[in-house]
Each structure stands twice: as structure tokens, then as C-alpha cells.
Image (tube, rainbow, N blue to C red; front, side, top):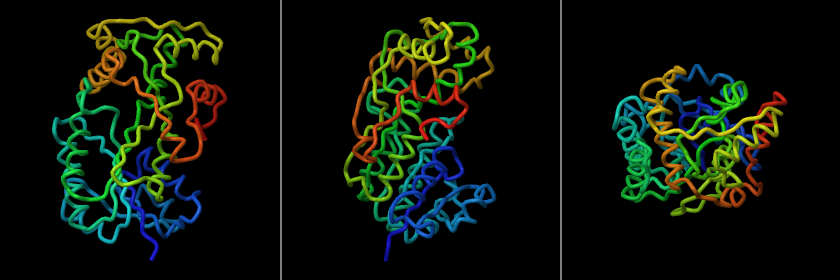
Length: 297
């Protein structure tokens, strides 16, 4: 019997994109795919295509174990529960325990770069989940997604308008990747490309500092943009003034501090290994935004 492929968080942006790529993968029929979500009504379009939509709540461990029963390969997409410290790790640990109880054949988890040594407040959630998978004895693979290029788009408009892109990243460099490329790699990994016991670092194709990012925005959009390096307190104040929630602004600034400290300075060819295709550079994502089409399609 052909093994089933379960995607959690299927109504989210990454989950939907993973399923899109699964549907275009050779040998993956819609009936093999299970899409887990808190609200199945959000996935009626996928159900209409023959995908099995499953109600899934990370706060209900026993129900999760029943939902995972019979699953061959499970993609555990990290949840968005960042509003209460410890909640996300507890959810992930419950999901790992449920997968073990259900006898899932292979678990893949979407983590972050270098969670062992990070200034990012949610890094312990990812490290703890990786440790829970290791302790579970389940065959598993880790997909460490680099910082999304899409995270930059939140500030692209103001940067183009004012000609300044503020940052607390200093001269630090990192390799941002499009969400679409992460989804493509995750779909390939889930469909069978990932090896048990491997950590895959999913990064963009080039290490960039904020000066490089500002220069690429200038070149693509034809407007002069310069990076303005700030201390963390000033940067946090700007983000709060722009309307970011109080628990999100410090996370973004800590991520920039992580870049400044060189802890995101990682470049890998794992996306190409999994998909046979190089990830899109940031300039291509900017060009797609300017042309009004989906990035990295």
C-alpha cells in the first residue's frame, strides 16, 4: 500500500504551498495526502480535489494520535503560538508524542537555523522539538528554514517611500529564502527525498547584509534605498510605532541581533539537493513583487 503523507498547519501559507507542490509531484495522488487544520472549513477547496482534510488541534493530544493513525510520513509544521512562552514547545512535544503513539513512519519538522546557539526568543521551541524527536525514537528529518524573504516585504514599502531601510542587523549577513522554496523543498522531503537522521539547512542562494538588500531593492524598483543601522532599542521603538504587536517587535529585533552576531550566516545547497532546483535569489522575489506576480512560482 502506498504510504500516506500528512501535512499539519495545512491552512497556513506554508502548509498550503507544500500541498500545492505535493499535488504536482510525480506519483503523489490527492488521495495520499492528508491535510490537518483546526478549521476544516478553510480547506474545502482541497477536499474538493480529493485530499483528505482532518480536524487537528495541538491542544488535544489524544485526538491528534487518532488523526495520525496510519500515517506513513508526517510534516510537522511549527505552530504560530508565540503569544505565550512555552506554549508552542508544549504543542510540539504533544504532537511528537501523538506521532509516536500512532506509529507514524517518519516525521519531518520545520525548524530554524542553529537553534542550539541563538538570540531569537523562540529558538528553544525549535531546539526542544528537535530534542523531543530524537528522544522519541521515531525516524525523523529536520528542515531548518532560513529567514523568509517575505519577512522583508513588510518593510519594503516604507523603505522605498522614505529611501531608508532601518535595521538592528548591523553588518551581519544571512541567506534569506522564499517561503515558496521552503515549501517546494518540504514537499520533496515529505514525498520521500529526505533521509532519516538528516538535518537539512534550507537557505537562499547568497549571503546578504542589509546594505546588499537595500541595493537590490534600489536596482529592482528604481528608487534609492540605503540601510540605516540602529541599536536594538531604537529599532524596537520604530517597529512598535509602526503598529507591530508588542510581542512581535522584540522577536524581529532579536532576529536582527542574531544576524548581526553571525548566527544566521549559513549557506547551504540542500534546497537543490531535495528539489533539483536552486532557490530564488532575493532580486527575483523583488522583481516578482514589482511585476505583481507570485514570488518563486
